[in-house]
Length: 327
Image (spheres, rainbow, N blue to C red):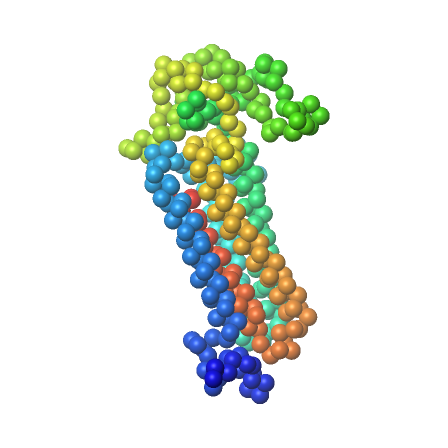
């Protein structure tokens, strides 16, 4: 005969078999732990793949301090990693408010649970919104670059600092090229946004300013910075340019190796989806708290279970933050 696993209506034990609970946890919490372990293995696989790929292309991998430099309200100010650090701090604070909500639940303090849950939701929304803002800046790009025939990225430098295409190309496209719309495009397909400048324009403007140099995506192992070519080497390298790249997408990336953008969108997007899911679940639990559902049940265990998920999401971000931004 199999063990009895039905709920005992008299002693309200979740587990059968004489009321013994594995690790002293209820069925719901055990299932949440099973989910967390399986999801942790999924994220581990993604981050391991990222680490191996980065190791393979270590000499041309984009430098985080040169990619994530934006801060809201500080347009044009070089603030490397500041906003990412703020996002991380906000998510960690949300874990603190979740802990306080769980603790208040143990003490059956309904109002405190509601307030701490509400704070957790607000911090979560701020984080997801910040991640969307960061994506927008990453997609739009900061400087612009050109791609060579062998699919390498060339950036432009003046006085040792990277500059944008708009800083030295001061005219619109001269080749008459316009973006195809559905009304005039081939097979009625809308074309992706084209660059404001043509390769020929950039080459011409570059030659007209002798202070400009080209920086390739390869990193100097001694200085840990991208290699800047001499003036003669820059002109020769720029002559092989075939396409203007502005921003980043799944195909090309103005910051360097396009695989970096692929991993960035996939892993941070996957984590962002987890945070968004956690926010939705927290909102549902919050309204149940306000309506007194758990007060009537005599237990706030549901808050504890969603708290486990939220702490897991926060912990995963620590690893994503370390892999993408710090290492």
